[in-house]
Image 1: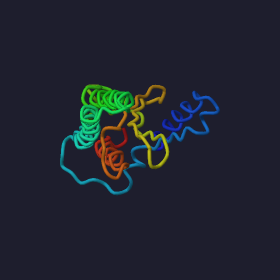
Image 2: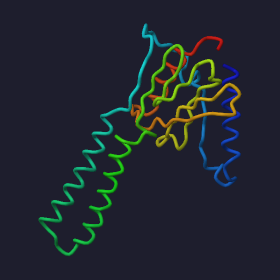
Image 3: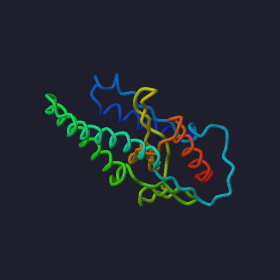
Image 4: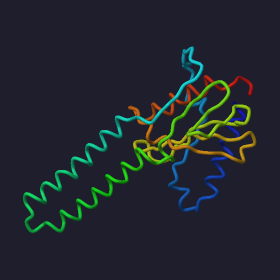
Length: 195
């Protein structure tokens, strides 16, 4: 566990040193080990593995809101074209582009749309396998202000020189920090003791 913290601190320092000095002041980048996120309350389960998929409810709500706005704009342009038609067309194109990007990211982007499976021998993320005996540290990278913070799962190799981060943006839960804590509890549950 102490080795995890050393590796994660080295990664954090490297991330900050790769940034320009002016950007470092506003970076708000934090890395906490999954054991810190998991806390002292352990999960009780007899599952041999656990899987997570991005939440569909958030996707549907977002698409309904933007889709509804797009439909209302088109309806308004047809019913009351008036003198603001140019502005309405511009807004409709803008909302349509946002809707298209949202649909792409929510359903087709492999960078955001992937499953996480954890068991006693490995973590599989979007088809990429990380065996426990190759993992040096696991952590949650957080960036941003408290109310608008984004989280990534960080998996580092044993020496900490190579690591991968996976965005957890589409794994939406309420409150916002609930998913990283839940994921961390399962990572710590399946992580071999004394690896």
